[in-house]
Image (cartoon, rainbow, N blue to C red; front, side, top):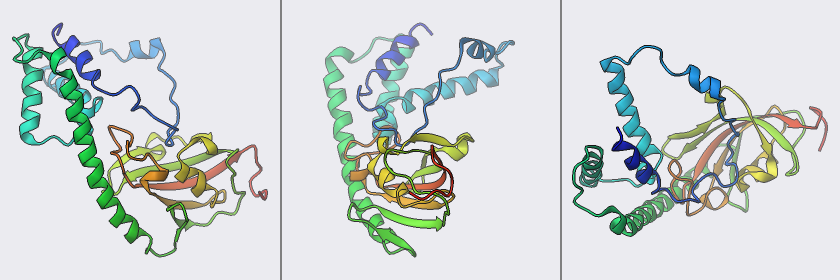
Length: 255
């Protein structure tokens, strides 16, 4: 296990320093768990063989999910090379490459692969936006936002200076879910002027109690860089949004 810890640190270091959340996209902040809570999660009994197997599998998945590997679209042959390096380092074997010397090429490879994926997303996204603009009830704005009301609200309408309380679900155009307050079981609250432009614009078309689908072109979402590892560059995003409350406003009060 001592051999594995440096490996995890090295792999984690591959992630770029600035790929974390930009503007809350929108994502509710989570408080760090208290020390007592962490302590209570430690199992009392020793792990069974099956539990160890599950833990090791989860460890491998965690390494991939928390680095650019999760969004680099590796081929089977490329993944085999990654696993070979992981295995040699984890088992304490002599490495066939000098990692510090090759790191610049690692960074270059990941950037090239991200760029390739972003270009592919751009093509797929354009076709998807065209189809969504023809959907029943769709409104396309000058920014490119496609707004589809799914349930009319009757309350107030927010402005960028308001803080809103919402439930939402975000998906890629292939249906992959990358965020959901519904799944967390808790509505999110955030300043409307502090999120991606698509949200700032789209929610100003809603009234409290209403529901809508926002189809967000990449240039008013996360742009060419995306938000790795879950959102590739140039991604068109779908958000199902329910506007629950405007903080500081009385429900039904006009704007």
